[in-house]
Amino acid sequence: MIADSASDVVHEIRRQQDLLKAGALQSAIINSANFSIIATDEKGIIQLFNVGAERSLGYTAAEVVNKIKPSDMHDPLEVQARAEALSLELATPIMPGFEALAFKASRGMEDSYELTYVSKDGSRFPAVVSITALRDDYGELIGYLLIGADNSVRKQFELELTNARAVAESANQAKSEFLSNMSHELRSPLNAILGFAQLLASDATAQTVGQKESTGQILQAGWYLLDLINEILDLAMIESGKLLLSLEPMALDDVMLECQTMIEPHAQKSGVTISFRAMPGSAFVRADRTRVKQILLNLLSNGIKYNREGGTVIVECVLKSPERLRISVRDTGAGLAADKLSQLFQPFNRLGQQSGDEEGTGIGLVMTKRLTELMGGVIGVESTVGVGSVFWVELIRAPKPQDSIHAWDAALAPAAPVESGIGARTVLYVEDNPANLKLVEQIIARRPDLRLSSATDAEAGIELARTQQPEVILMDINLPGISGVRALQILREDPLTRHIPVVAISANAMPHDIRKGLDAGFFHYLTKPIRVDAFMKTLDVALEAARSSPIGAGPRKART
Image 1: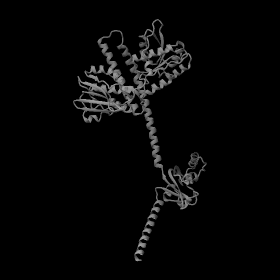
Image 2 (image 1 turned 30 degrees about the vertical axis):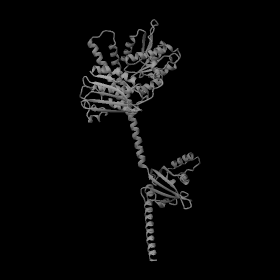
Image 3 (image 1 turned 90 degrees about the vertical axis):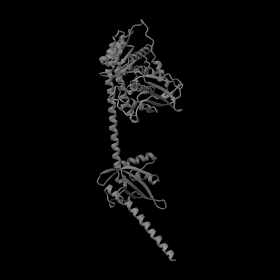
Image 4 (image 1 turned 60 degrees about the vertical axis):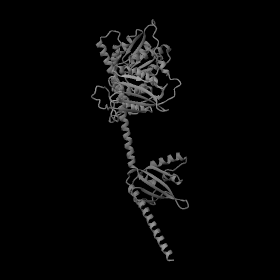
């Protein structure tokens, strides 16, 4: 008996302790200043208003309990908007007011919303509110519990983030415009420098040894400067995410052969032997042909540039896995220490070569790495001081395409020479830069079958096109008055001129400029500085297209 009584006493003591603990927990929740806790009856009238609610909303519990609903302290326009949104979502009419807040919770659905609270003094703050239906032991609805948290900090952060993004986008746009303008301004004078130098180099008149050397130096320096401009623009476009790649199956051996033809004279001049080892059959990768060529030429140039006199460069391609092909460029240069290897792919870092004889910006390997990775490939390097280095890139393999010859390759094949005795064919050039105009005049003067007509603005060019009916029109883009693009539109709308192929010749050389030009309807898009051989090849294709295009019909469009 005594033992049972002692046991009952202990049980009662524990029960009282549990009740005290539960009461303390309940009190702590209700009196929390960090959250607004509001409880209502089944009609939405406030029955409990905790310390946190008093602190954030400015009302005392006595001012709201049994008097108002939580919806009365929300922005009424937001409450109405929530009612309309729920009506559409749930396909049932919902009245604005407390019903809009409690509708989901009353039907057993989890719900939270973001609305603006309006405090007693009229101040406002965004809040995230979670609402739950309260039910008795029989499942009958007896009220609602709303737990709210001030969302001002997150909203402020989101606002600052949005503003920061807007500033970054504006800065990025400004940088893109600057780069585009810089490209244009640098290419225009380079067009005259390289254009006239090419004419001098190919002039039939005998030159002295000194004149030939001087012309060669101009060309070498000019093309090198153009390469630097292109490298900087490419890197900027990659970093801004605007570089577009055309990924398609391509024959690696074709590109390797092109690179070999281009790089061997440079290797011979530097006293370096370059060897391209046989590839394992036909190798196709999924990549951008132009960028693969750029990657290989950069690695080959570095292998020659940083080699020793009488050194070698060995190029080989091996099957690294069923999915990847590896191209390796091995040189016999001085090699790199481990601490230098870790800095190789940093922009503008020339690893102490800044004061040396070798030219360069220090971004070639950075470009190579970024381009490789954009095509899904990887790049690596191994080096031993005093022995040499091997740079390698791995590209994703691709099946051999059904037809690896592009349609536009045939379109740009050299045109048949113009038949003698048919009279000179007129080419109209619309260009406001006197040096560029003089350059094309001298190029055309070497073709007795052609006659050049010119205009320095679009309006005069359009009038000449109507009256002279030239075979082909060469059009600058940035012209005084209306642009070359607008001039093209006017020519296309006129039955007298719509059949004439119009070739753009512009210093606007960014990829998006070229794409916009072709989309606008230019037959072809040449960028300044022009290469005379490419210019003449394009002109012959346009002349051939003009010959086969009847008056009144649109010209065939070639691809750049």
